[in-house]
Image (cartoon, one colour):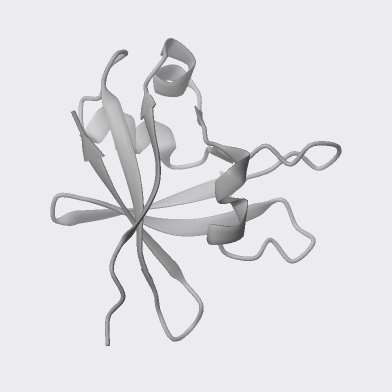
Length: 107
């Protein structure tokens, strides 16, 4: 039986979020795939009917603040996101291989 999507966070996008990377709340780390000692994992981010592969990374040392980095700029450009837009991210499900699938809504 499919589980209900879980709301992860909402964020009003700032210039850095648009031009570089999206900083996301540390409280969602347990919902991301296991980093297994590394500092990057790929997630599947769905918006509308399309899916983008995006890497979530954490700092190698110190506080493990997660960001969406590699692939994020393409997502921003493809969807014409701009400063002031609000995105809400949901965790849709995990597949049998442990891959996590996330969905965003943009206002």
